[in-house]
Image 1: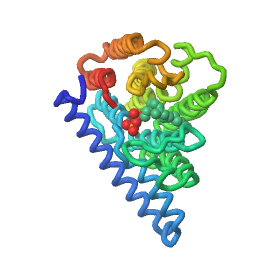
Image 2: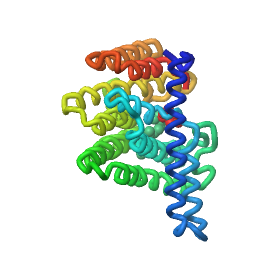
Image 3: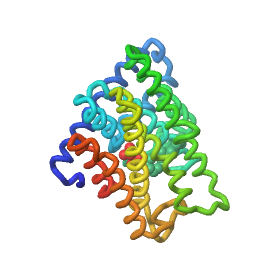
Image 4: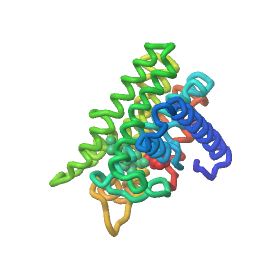
Length: 296
Ligand code: GRG
């Protein structure tokens, strides 16, 4: 399966376009509802522009699409999960803005254009990341307040995945690079936290919204963890440059051939973990296969 498969490409593009449309509309409503605060305040206007610059830029929307397809598999509709999918993309975008900063990876380009701090400066980029993170929780509260139990469970899942025992913790391990011996187990741990947690969250949170049983939720988490790791291994293979190998890269550690077999193994395991769901899980199986073949 790849984006060259017309049916898959159509489904992906349609879902990603719905996410983009929803995010554009919601952000604009949100911005307008705060116009009393922003009028005449250049700093605030710049902050909103900086948030918009990153959130509405040209990403794959892997996490929101995964969240929406999981929710659709469980409940046969998608619209209720759109705010959740947007909240997850807000957290993802904040992490990319902060990861690109000079004090982290110091990158100049992201999603085919200059990084947020290159356009708005380091300080505003930091604030745009902070605002996108808090905005994610405002979206959850505003959209799911009618079902407080679901809203609280979502907040708990989001904080666990995004915080110190999830993505931020993974980033902390990542920046502590000195005299460290990297094994496959340690790389798995690092990447399961740094990249995998938000991908697993995209699946698990859809389950929470659909009110699945605890047993089903655990099965979704297991699938999400496998897919999250597979996403990072695919990323490492795409990012591997033998002339300047990165130490924390599965392809550097294992070699390209073994890293590809490892990716195949965890992709197969991810697909196996969906077997009990039957044909309803086909879109998620397609996503695993898409990740295996992806070129960006
Ligand atoms: C700074 C708190 C903090 C966390 C940073 C996610 C992350 C943690 C850093 C990103 C570094 C990176 C490039 C990791 C590799 C995997 C990854 C998350 C790639 C970017 O995600 P994609 O490919 O990007 O889904 P798009 O742009 O398509 O959304």
